[in-house]
Length: 305
Image 1 (tube, rainbow, N blue to C red):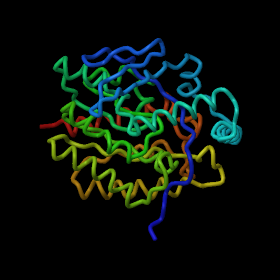
Image 2: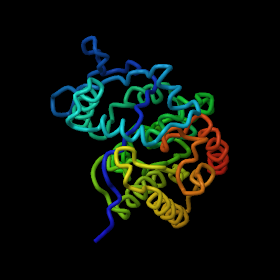
Image 3: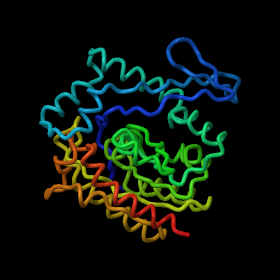
Image 4: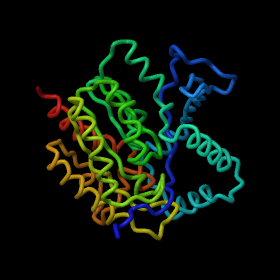
């Protein structure tokens, strides 16, 4: 039997992105910041704009202030408990259920931004495909994305969801390079249990799609994880090492560039060094500052003729 790597929901910090731009075919719906699009089955697709985060929320993630992981685990379990009646938890569950029922891969998330790029004739040099660690990167340092880099991370996404939106959010933009970083939410079980092999197949599918469309690939190692906050009894560190080993081998087999974020961000036990993450999963600005020169070196190599 294949070993499953999914072990429960990962408590992720919600991250915002730029506001939706109005595009042809899209119409405002009501006062709740929704956009609508005509669907092929003669219905309407309704897309919710991602609300911006407060300065307090941004500081909590990005400014280095080591947290008590036991306390954060308790908070995560209370928040994720399906019986929780806190307004924030109820609103989170309702929004998650609606989004997954209507747009499981979350194609709505960047529909407007993608259309604006194409209509403006802009071709990105690099598209970053990933989850909240990628999505949070642009909020941590927008200057890093002023050089033809485009961020297409979505908080809480598994590699399976990324495969489903890869053509929409990467190939259709015709970048020269794609930076792929996925797996944190596969370990977290965001979209159900998945085996190691199935995870690797998802990454390979994205590499194949990119290479078939003349897009070079930079494949990123998973950053460290100190713990799965809703399940502190589960030691995620060995699995992160295992998946990173398989990603490195896959990069060698496929002839793509591998960038190792794990080694410089890990503590001696293989968890996330608290100098670089507050919650044991998401980098602070100090963490992204460690990642950026590594990313730039790998991307510059890929961008060579």
